Amino acid sequence: MEQRLAEYRARKAKHHQEDAQTSDSQTGKEQAKKSLTQTLKERFHRVCNRWRTPDIAGHQNMAPTIQTSEPREEAALLDDTSSSRSKWKVTLLLKVLLWLVLLGLFVELEFGLAYFVLSMFYWLYEGTRGPGQKRKGEKSAYSVFNPGCEAIDGTLTAEQFERELQYGTLTGI
Image (cartoon, rainbow, N blue to C red):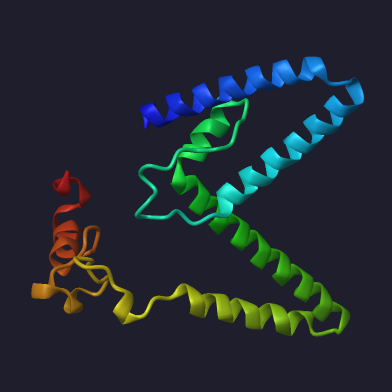
């Protein structure tokens, strides 16, 4: 990781030297046009890199190709998990915006309450997991479904309840 960051910084310094040499030879108008074009290209590549899915096989040898001026952006380019998180956030934002637009449409059609209630039921349905989605080693909240009827931590058992009724809650401390 450190080697890739050092290579990136070396390319960045070389790029800045080339820009300084070429800027001396250009007129002010051409320079402004080129810097605007370069800025737009950098922003376009930055957005594309955030949305690109990482290539698992060739990803280890790939170095970032975008020249930025902030250390935070350097770290973001080298960190693939931030790109997948940002995709998730953008997708969620788009879904919420779509829901709000449709809510506004249904309010205008005087079906806003029905749309709201039905969408809440849909979100409840989508938020539940099926039995096939249980992770390996995960315990069920219902002890009868666990091996050996083992209860999860924090479950109030009959024995604990009796102990607290007879001796008070201070005995468990």
